[in-house]
Amino acid sequence: MTQAVQDPTLIDLFPLSDAKDWQAAACRGDPNHDAWFPYPSQDFAYAREICSGCPIRRACGDFATRTGQTGVWGGHEYDRGRLIRE
Image (tube, rainbow, N blue to C red; front, side, top):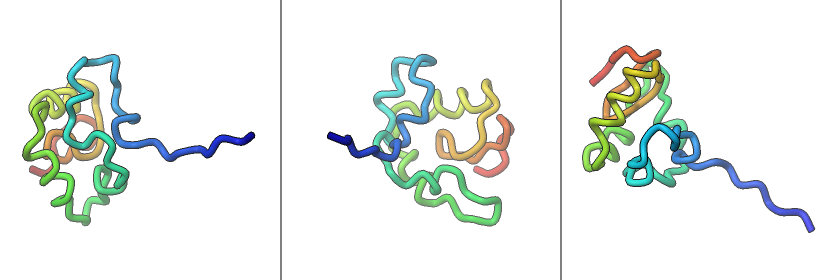
């Protein structure tokens, strides 16, 4: 019997070992991966809206800065840990 392979959800991409609070992320389970890693000319309003009510928003942004992440973290866009769009 072959099991179906599921695409990873956004929470699967998070470094769960870094903080116990990642399980509380508002984006947990969001299948829209592209929204979290927009092109420079692409709007990221969808991700920013999800982040706006997230209980770990600040920790998420701090993590992005500290570890050099790229994409939308904590409602802001980063490029290799540097804030590029609010």
